[in-house]
Length: 101
Image (cartoon, rainbow, N blue to C red):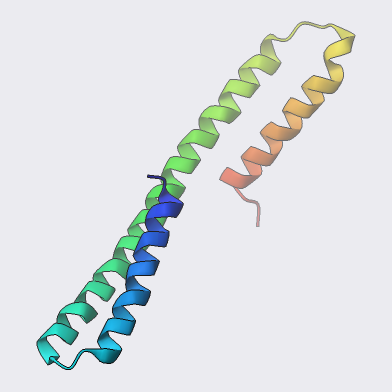
């Protein structure tokens, strides 16, 4: 299960729990459902933070892999366009990881 799907499930659960609370008459059950909504909101935040942390690691690896390929590329003139494309990807990834203010 990927992070977007996990977040979507939590959001769906929160929506359903809100509908449940609107119709539940037992105060204890309402409080329990409200507590779950609060818990799920924190889980969404944690999930999104984890996704960013993993994304940064994956993008850093991608950037380093491409930089190694660029550094080891031969001086063949026919590669200049492709190397330029790879450099552009590295620059975009770098800006994503370390945005400039």
